[in-house]
Length: 229
Image 1 (cartoon, rainbow, N blue to C red):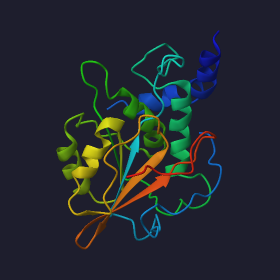
Image 2 (image 1 turned 90 degrees about the vertical axis):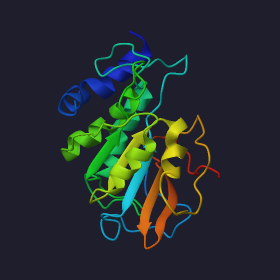
Image 3 (image 1 turned 90 degrees about the horizontal axis):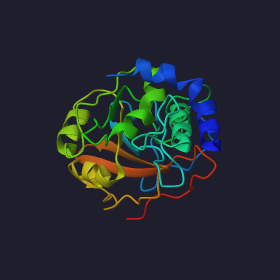
Image 4 (image 1 turned 180 degrees about the vertical axis):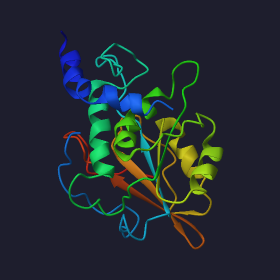
């Protein structure tokens, strides 16, 4: 058995078959993270309630040397890699800690959005990435929107009460940011292809939205930096 398959079995077989079944329609955090760049850092379960939208990229994808695998361990290049599955589990702990408070700047989601798949399978990885968290929180993931629907996605997400989490493909994450009216400071125009470890947050203010960034720091290789504008 290849090393990737063995890793996958260890990561997924014990937990994710049940997770994805429940969500059909981690590794531990290495410690506290700094406050989000570009803001003073809002308290997650207090003032941020009902005012914050958190945006993440899906977990790691195949790159030629590291194949994608589905929840059953079968090769599937529309799915996450073994490391991507590890990130998905770790993100559940990040957004819903089993002990201790949430990090400053974060909020426990009451709604989760992930892109719906197109005919080529695009959009599968975002759904896989949020599946462990959705299972833990008992939330059905909203997959009504897909690539190209970013304006409608943001309109729907910002019309809901409670904190919202969106997981999407990296190429369209700047389009999601652009759909928020009156954002300050200006979000980066591009999301680098090699970054899977950053959270963008949009917090409602009296006259628009406050943008900030936060490193995930959930896997050993994650960078303690955000995305340059």
